[in-house]
Length: 307
Ligand SMILES: Nc1nc2c(ncn2[C@@H]2O[C@H](COP(=O)(O)OP(=O)(O)OP(=O)(O)O)[C@@H](O)[C@H]2O)c(=O)[nH]1
Ligand SMILES: [Mg+2]
Image (cartoon, rainbow, N blue to C red; front, side, top):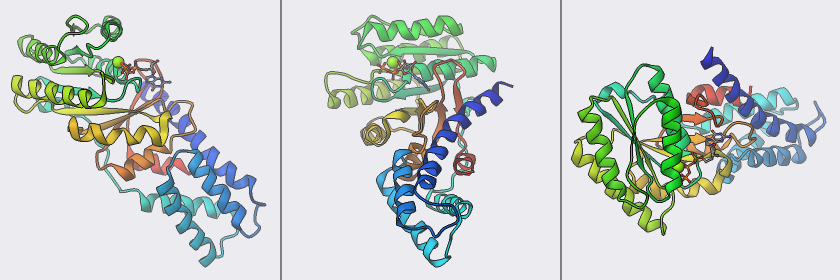
């Protein structure tokens, strides 16, 4: 029931992407007439509008243009099929990757990303998910940069019914991470999820801080963090992606979460993430509520995109 409503939400977001592209193409062509330059331009505009990115758009348009010519494609339905086939061909095939929290105890997850992307909300959603499975979850408020960040995490924790390890605003994030992991060990908790700042005095400082937090966690629990999630805001599109590279390296990211895919026509950004990064998208956020997180299935995503 709940999984179904997740799926409905994702589909709504995807539907907008799909509609956006197809409508643009339709607008610029008369059905069943030869597909000419205007239709191809419309396709290009639609793909860019859905935030598929310039590189992927150009590759797709090139391949579709030559198939239209070689196969003498004249019908819209056929064009949509070709679009799906070529998209599948350009996106690396990947299996769905879930987070197996039973692999370690406690299983430590570090959550990183630029400010405002949805880190704290994603942590609340993950905590809700695992709490509902009957697991013991502890949160670590290692975004000590702003007092409001600690309060926000505390508010979610109270609502979900999970403990938070926190220090005063301005204190050392590494110390909070350390205490969260050590509390999880002492209390026999299964999962620790650690929030981090998205902004410090400058970017170099932020990356250095994340490296330190990682080191502290590793020292307190060898092998941890078991998962480092990079949270990306789906609505910031291509600009948002350019920030990702720094995090991938400094924080040793193992999984990506793309948020705010509800009600946006820019769901195509996931295609570009799948093409650019070898790190898997593990979840997508489709709303501000605690249940609005869906495990990501790459094959199903590409299939529904141009259905
Ligand atoms: N519509 C929608 N809004 C979201 C989603 N995820 C997060 N948000 C909203 O985005 C805003 C920022 O989310 P936060 O979780 O505070 O982001 P953050 O990365 O922790 O931000 P900082 O702590 O400032 O770095 C909030 O208003 C959230 O409700 C989502 O999937 N969909
Ligand atoms: Mg936050």
